[in-house]
Image 1: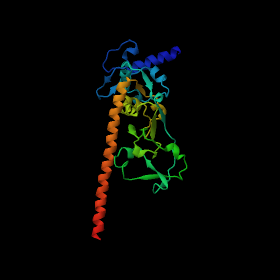
Image 2: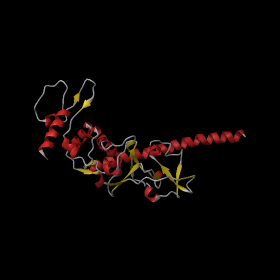
Image 3: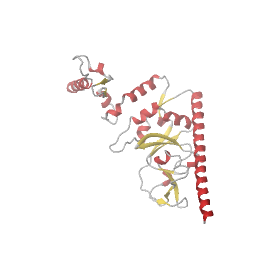
Image 4: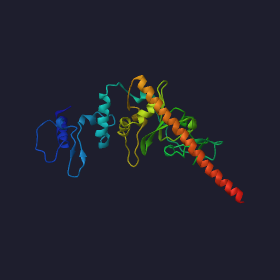
Length: 275
């Protein structure tokens, strides 16, 4: 690095680390790094080394990418003492390309379709607003199918929501706005579901958020999420608890759908008897 660039880095670090009302100091800018400052407008500011920006693979210049909470979460994760591996070493993380949709009226002419909004609503994945992607759609539908035991992660608009593909959704088609996370053989999906739902994983995922009008993260970025390697007994326990909760959720959806169907059947019977 040339002397001119070093000088520019020092000046920039000094400016970013400036504290209103503080006495001038000739101390190295590095001492001011990671210092939280609050001005009269109660705006939180902090400084980071320029090298952290230069060393970023995506050359990100947006402040949210260097959020202190994300940095703190990663720091605590690394201090935990557990070995850390990227998610890509535990699962296949993929995202199909965009495609134009042609709708079918029923399952005879298409495949049941689900998007991120559907997954956030108990009724949408249980009974109402069924949609089917036509077999005439100009895309490889097999590449869009989701299977039991996979995880789906929202990657556009609302970022980071995690969903488990239950038996009821096996063989459905999912939108291209859902990243597919397919656990490797022997990797407990319940543990991955619980971990990716945790704050330390969510901060890593949200730290990659980018976009203009609509927020996005890519499957390449999600692959980089660091996962701690707990003892086998702990992983098994977390997996069992998560799967029990997911199983109860599926049963709750079925019961809710049954209750709604009962209401509709009762109304239909009333109309029939009134004729």
